[in-house]
Image (cartoon, rainbow, N blue to C red; front, side, top):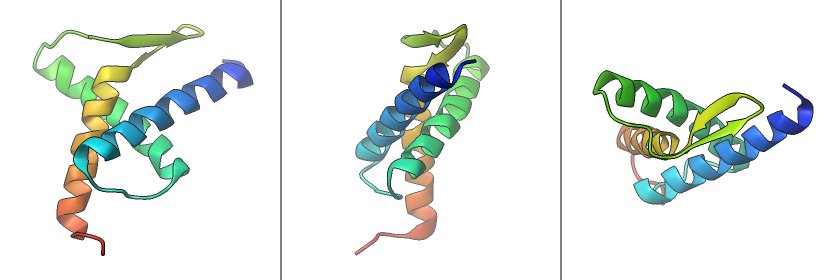
Length: 91
């Protein structure tokens, strides 16, 4: 993968992580945290979709690498919700 393709993948992951945080209603950090949450969400959401035999609704292909956008957002929201339960509310 070229550096440009990797950068596009990072931007997509950041957007998915930010949307997951917005859905969960809890902010865990800044842009880097959103990127990490996007990738964790892609892993978790993809695993859940495969486990329960759910279809891939929206996937983006970046230089041959598929990124499950819908499941990444769902997985990031679940991860952030779990983090908010463990950490408590921020004031």
